[in-house]
Image 1 (cartoon, rainbow, N blue to C red):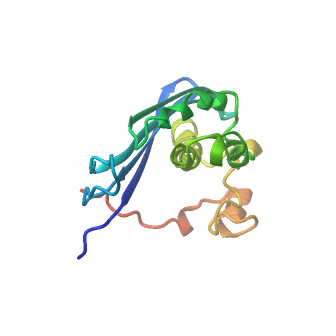
Image 2 (tube, rainbow, N blue to C red; image 1 turned 60 degrees about the vertical axis):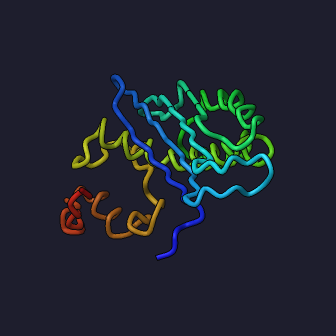
Image 3 (tube, rainbow, N blue to C red; image 1 turned 120 degrees about the horizontal axis):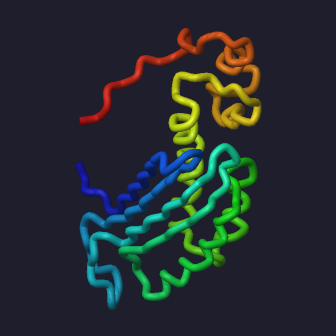
Length: 184
């Protein structure tokens, strides 16, 4: 097997940080396994980007109340200039329109493409983490406001089999997959 020339790893974890509050931390790591010098001034580093974003999010409105961002590794000295504008995440709701709002504030020349990709990857984990923390994974949503996942994928399409079971108040067990054991 050939050695990859570039590897990106994104990891996102959500923890309950207080009553009705989640802290969601995402990391983005870009590596060059071969560590080749590509241009003058390049030290051949294997880690190109090592970035972390931590969002504190209020439930049930999914409003970001705090944003912390860090860059442990980056390719250019000017890259950290993209950090201060990320304070503008505070006050946004990780709900409908979030992706657009993030792109408008930080997309392209207005921010860092890598941090923007990380923040966009974190949004679904905010919702999934809130469901697990505040509603319980086995409990069906009781409020129409908690049906954020309808039409987010094929399985949860509007009026599809899962949505229909949920609307009738029936168990989702008949369509539940056998979960794979965690990786060791």
